[in-house]
Image 1 (cartoon, rainbow, N blue to C red):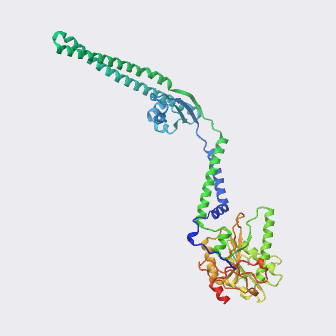
Image 2 (image 1 turned 180 degrees about the vertical axis):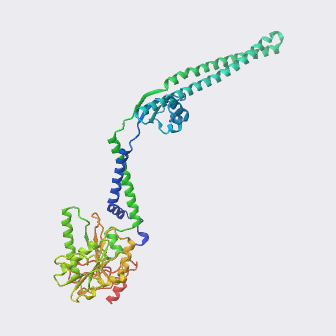
Image 3 (image 1 turned 120 degrees about the vertical axis):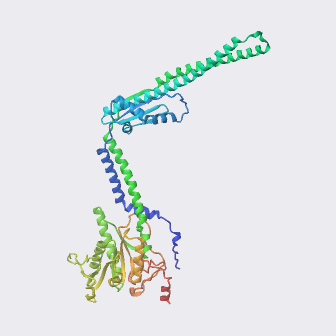
Length: 517
């Protein structure tokens, strides 16, 4: 009984494959590691080449007439805003005897409210002494301006109260004059008028006393506010540690560089759409991943592993070639040099069975111009392949990179093994390769994946249903799938054990049913 899993439609595919995105970003680690290193170096350069200007800091305690325990900081923010005014800056410059413009000086200092009543002033200068002098002059100018505003407010309030008192005293004098002119013997009406004048005089006397008391209280609170506004922390230079600044700037640059590099790598991965998982590469090419070769070795043990993997790959491909009579080719995508090496290793393995000629179809005749070593097989160009003896086995080597002449691929071999570097070709180009090979009736035996991700745990086998190769390893012509991107995969020759046969496409296609009938 054969089961087949239906392929999902385009609408069921996720918008972004997070697993493929993570793998692709990890493969671009050189990019974001270089960006992080560049950010670290830039941070170090900024700390060393652009040291901060000499800075002085001072703290001022500011007393407010309208202080409240639940004040949200509005008053101290007002003081910070008043600190950045040309009046205070001009007063500080006059005390310093500096010819600088107040607008220019305001760019060299700043203030921040630490609490509702504590103001911190930071000033820069050409040297530590100049910065300290500027901070002291600025703090003194702010305190003097604040005290002056407190006194002006108290004087204005007291003057207003005293003006009200004087107006009431004038009215009281008129009332007293009216009382002196009235005679109690003039009758009941005069007595009633005199009584109202006495009541008015008492009211005016009370209000005059109240206004006088309030005017005195307005001036009483002023000394407390004046004494409460003072410099509580004398201006002092801020010491800058170069190692600490360098470490801080380097850490910030490293983080920003890594973030920027990761963002660029992620965006480039999504835009480029270059499959890196063996699952995706097999699906786009319509052929199973039958072997893998790691990337560039970084140590002796990895070189041994790469050598052992190449030997296993050569043995497997030699069995595949021996299992069929049709010529086999190796077609590369993004790994021409590795493909040439694999072809030479395979030709040496097949030389024990008879003469072997490697047909060089790579751009630039890379194999034909290569210096031969003792035991190397003959390498001929595509033009001389027709003149080779009929008894000589041919092994074609070509490319399916952009610019390939598709009609020449069939002359390299009607069966082929695709040697693809992970993350090199886009999904659209992998579909193009599969479609073009299907149209040229070149059967794909399998895919050899170069430089796969070591953490990739996806399955690169197409489990569309079993189909054994016919006796004698005869070929089946490749057919385009209904999706237009996949094609039939040729099984290994009948001489191979069943466990070593390559997975193929399902036999439920119309072509296979017709052949069965």
